[in-house]
Image (tube, rainbow over all chains, first blue to last red; front, side, top):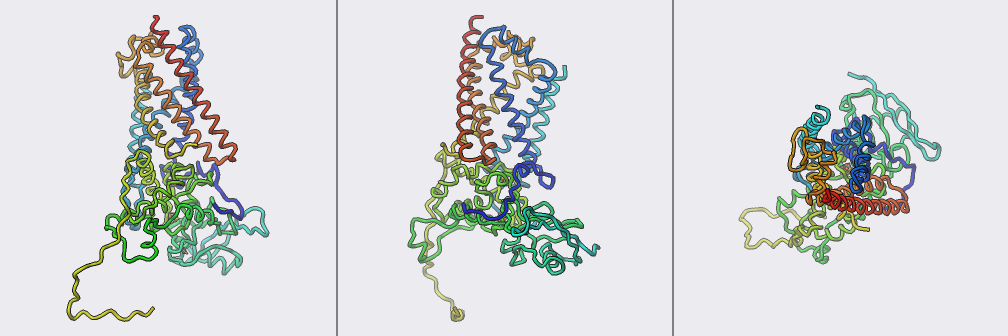
Length: 144
Length: 271
Length: 128
Ligand code: SF4
Ligand code: SF4
Ligand code: FES
C-alpha cells in the first residue's frame, strides 16, 4: 500500500452504522453483527452456568435459581429473538457469500439491476421466516 | 421550476485550514444542469480557488467521484434535478485522505489494485508479449467478466463500503472486483498468484454483503456480486473442487477462405 | 497464522452445524410447550430445566455428543466472528496479535471446560 498524504477522512465506526439513505441489507448487516455479539455474550455465560449440572443437583438448582427472575426472562427472550434472526439471516448470507442467489454476471444496462436487487426476495423471505419463528417462540414462552 | 440552487461544499485547504469546513454558494439553475456543471458555476461566480477533479464530464474517466447529498456518485453523471432537493451538499469521497477541497487521494486504492495483478497472466509469456493471434474465447466466457470490466476506478464503491470505513488494510470492492475480473477471464491463468493476497486477511472475507458498493456504482459493475463469486471460487479451491481449465488457447488461423470476387480491398493504412 | 480462506470456510461450516443442533436445542428447551418432543424431554410434563429432565438428557449419549459438537462449533463461530469485528477496527499490529491469542486461549479453555462438564454430567446422570 502506498503512503497517503493529506487529511484523513475515514468514516470510522459511523461507516458501520451509517444508514438512512441505504438499502435494507445495510441494516441487516448491522443487526447481524449486533445479534451475533449478543448471542456470543449469552453463550459464554450459558456454558459456565449450565456446567453446574456436572457437580450435583444442588449446584444445578442453585445456578438455575440465580438466573431466574424477570430480568433474566426478558434477557432470554431477547436472546431467542436474536437467535431467530441471526440463524435465518445467516442462512441467507451463507447462500449469498457462496455466490448463490446473486445472479450471473450480466451486461449492465441502465437502470442497473444489481445483485442486491436480485437477492432482495431472499432478504425479505429471511425476515419473514425469522418473524414466524419469533412469534412461535413468543407464544411458547409467554403464552402460558 | 426552481431558479436558484444552493451548493454546500466541504472545503479544505491544507495550507490554511486545520479542519474542513462547509461553505454555501448560490448559483442560477438551468434545466439539465449536472452537479459538475454547478461546480463550474460556483468556481466562476464565487470561489475561483475551489478544487476538484474532473475530465470527461460524461461518466467515463472516473475522476469526479464525490459525496453528493450523502451518497457517493459521479458529479458529471448526476443531474441536480434528480436529487429532488434545493440544496446540493458536496464533500470529498470519504475513506480517502483529502488532498484539497473535493480532491481525494486515491493512490492507496490504486496501490491495492496493482498488488492484485489486474492483467492477464499466462505461462506462455512469449505469445502474450508478441501475439501471433487472438486467444480463443466464447461469447459465454466473455460474459463471465464483461460486467466487471466496465469499472472506471472512480472509488465511489470504496467510499460506500462499511468495512473500508474502518479497515484501511481491506482491499476494498474495486480492487477485489478487478481481481475477480481477471480470475474469471478464461484467457488468464493467474488465480494461484492472486490467491496469495486474496486468501489472506485483506481478501474478500472482510466483505459482509452490505451491498453498498453495488448500490452506488455508477457503471453497474456490481462489485458485491464479483466478491461473492470470488469467495465461492476460493472456497471451492480450498476443497479442491475448483475447476481450473488451462488458459484459452491461441485461436486457429481461418483456413480455406477465398475472397469473393468484386469485394474491394481495404484502404491503405494511415498509421 | 492460518489463512482466512480456511478459517472463513470453517466459519460457514460451523454456522450450518449450529443452525441444525441449536435448532434442536431450542426446540427442546423453548418450544417444548408448543411442540412437545417426548423422546428428548423424558419427564415432559415438567419444565425442560427441571433436574429430572437434566438427568434424563444427561444419560443420553446422543445429548452428550451433540453437546460437545455444538459447543465446539458455536465457540469457533462466535469467537471468529468477534475476531473479525475487532480486527476490522484495524487495531495496531501488536494489538491484533494479542486479540488473536486471547480469543484462541479463551476458546480452547471454554471448550475443555464444557467438554469436561458434558462428560462429568453424563457420568453423574448414570448414577441416578
Ligand atoms: S466498481 Fe464502480 S464504483 Fe467502484 S471504482 Fe469501479 S466504477 Fe467506480
Ligand atoms: S458488499 Fe462488501 S465490499 Fe461491497 S460495500 Fe458491502 S462490505 Fe463493502
Ligand atoms: S468527469 Fe469523467 S467521470 Fe465525471
